[in-house]
Amino acid sequence: MGYINIFQMMSIGGCMNKIIVSRAPFRVSLAGGGTDIISYCSKFGGQVIGFSIDRYVVTTLLPRNFQGVNDFLSYNNEFFSDYSEIKNRYLLHALRVLNLNQNFKASILSDAPPNTGLGGSAAFLNSFIYAGAEIGNSNYSRVELAELSSNVEIEDLNRPVGKQDHYLSSLGGMNLLTFDEKLNVLPTKINVKDKCIHYFNSRLMLFYTNITRSAGKVLSDQSNKMERSNKNAINLMHDIKSLVNPMYDAIINDNPNEIGPIIAEHWYRKRSLTNSKTDDQISQLIDLAYKNGADGCKIIGAGGGGFVLVSSKEGMQQKIRDAFTKNKIKELKFNIEFEGVSANTITI
Image (tube, rainbow, N blue to C red; front, side, top):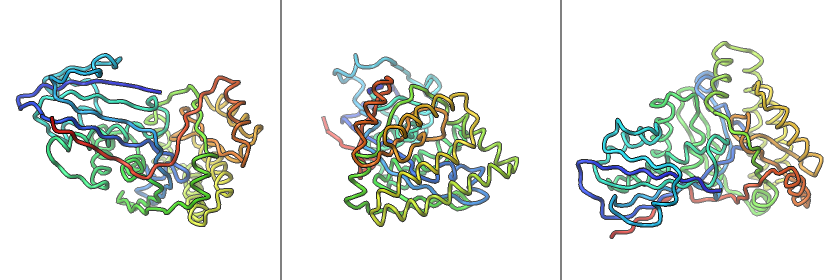
């Protein structure tokens, strides 16, 4: 999969004299997803456990007069000389954070389509802000970057999201994120051992449902239930958060066979929070996975579409793949990655 945008910025400043390439990974949330959103977290605190994968949003910043192949790769070009001309709201607020005053061209390449539950907007913001910081010789830590990008979504764009995507993408690897009632984040890096690495790289699979959805709408519905103090919804969120500790124990004790059933329980709780019209279609795909050797499945992200995460029993991966291929469902292959956001600079 490849999804490309090119933007060109002409400002009153000088032209940059380097090429900057940065990348930020997508993420997979294993347990606790949704407990980081403000409506729940501000009352009860939250916990999420997840990891970054070797699928990325890649930002390339070039001098505006640079001539290269990027010019014909894009399906969506945007040219502007003033912030008021920018149509992409994520880009607009990222540029305001950076306060750049140099002419440049930006190429944005994504390994996955938007609105599919892999934390793409956070990966975009992390990748672009990290690259832009190189122009101004800024030096953001991984935590500072996660806070900046999450602030763009939560404060500037007023989206009802949490901070897990931004932290998991920025930090890289497997992380336990603990959120207090003031939305402060305590990240704990988890050492993933051999059996679990093999499990994540070979027995966990992502299949694209061909359904895109707005995480904002799904999370808004969830937030409304929290704000109305819907007891059933709150108890479901408590249950979802309670699955983080057994997931953590399974990973640190290198017991991968315990992970799939926790994923299954997580989805059982999570789907009760949504009223999506696509639930029947998604349920059919999840049933298909179980019939062919899965021991756990869930929709990645807020729910309602995007990617299905399938945990396979040992040796059943190909049978599951064949069943999904027969139903014209594509797989996004991945491995766990441990680097997080990164950037390289070439002076020209």
